[in-house]
Image 1 (tube, rainbow, N blue to C red):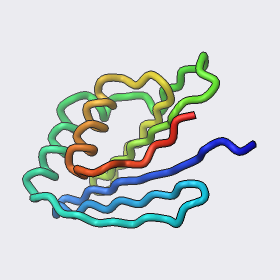
Image 2: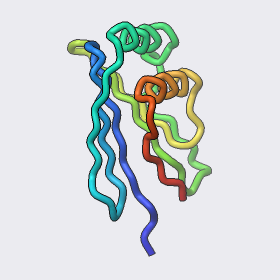
Image 3: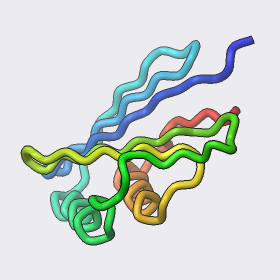
Image 4: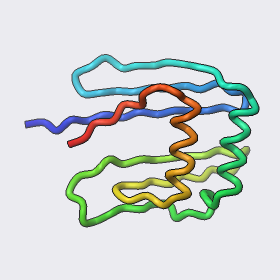
Length: 114
């Protein structure tokens, strides 16, 4: 028996370009692109700098969960990169950024629950 498996990524550039890529087991890969205004992209950057995301630990994992969706948010500001991985219970700062990314993409982001 194989467990469902998927990966998805959303990249948002300062210019407002939004790229989405997804792979689900047994389905062809998906690659889509959209645009938001540069002002909307700036809202995400301002949130990242003001809500404490940049001070989060590198990983949050609920060890009591046998299986859970894992999320990763990576941010590039010039030479600086910040990556936070979250499995299970995520800090509010992480969830706020995740919600903003979902808002800017404006479409479904593939997730597979087990």
